[in-house]
Image 1: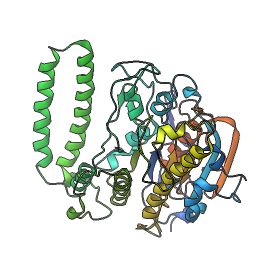
Image 2: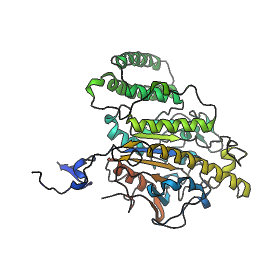
Image 3: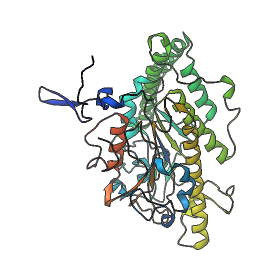
Image 4: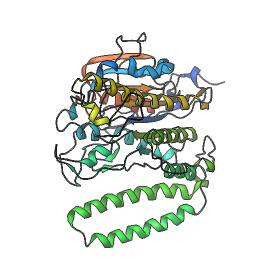
Length: 445
């Protein structure tokens, strides 16, 4: 008969020759009585530009008895699935400009280099890409980076930073922001190809990429230093695509199977012209990617840094986002600012609702996910990096306690939350950036 055993600690390390290696998440780390099959853990980060109206964001009471303030009211149906953490900040973003340092370093908890050109450097790897590196070989798409606005180029002369920093939150390396997709049709095609690989297609693509790479090498000899750097970054992306296509070229050798079918007729017909429809489609694609298990990591930017999207489509708002965020305590601008914030929360709630409706085992996809909504600054008028507005939904397949408002000490590192999420995802790390440890009361032992 099976013998009883003591579950492995989640902090168990492999040791030898003076080094230690953290184990990935193993079933042996589950209690013996709790070994019912669960779905894989997913993680998504939704980024809001321009901060929030701070007096209507934070719950008044700590603990499980918290009440949702006006801006978070759309989350009332998910109250028992939430972790709202107060007093987190990104110390690395306290200097520099108002927006770019806070956007480019949001998921790295590092300080970006001030530059006007292509020599961008965030001095780290974003937490989503650390998770993607650990789990990417389990799915055909290691991670999905989405947005609604193309990469902004040029220089913001007001602060002396290249605008490229404001277009990315995902970084695969210090000088490698991960390209994001803004066309929902292209995203759907990627998901469909992942779920329905065609034998030989990947090989043809590989041949094409080889040709592009050879052309790039020849072209590089005739370029200046700055253009060579741009081309090197491009060929790095090509190499990443090559690895993904090699995986797709041999579908029979992979044990991965989609967890849901994908209808080819579901492809969006065109690029949305309206922002609200664009956002809805992209978040629907995140839900679809998680349901099919095409990927387990996703990031989504509602807009780039300094986004001045016109929000007149929201009842009661007459104007553009960035302009309204500089409210100067004007009561009418504050009212409109809060309505824009609440609209973002409503879209977040819509994604949570979709994931909750996707059954998986004895629960649903939301139960097995961590979906974060947050911003790199608190008040858009002050560009304040203290007490950042972040809310996390989902239990990560039972690895997180939920239904609570956690009040940490003033200026607790935001990296503590990233560390907590990485450990819950099954990528145990002892430290991330300036982290001091997992957030107490959130991560199950």
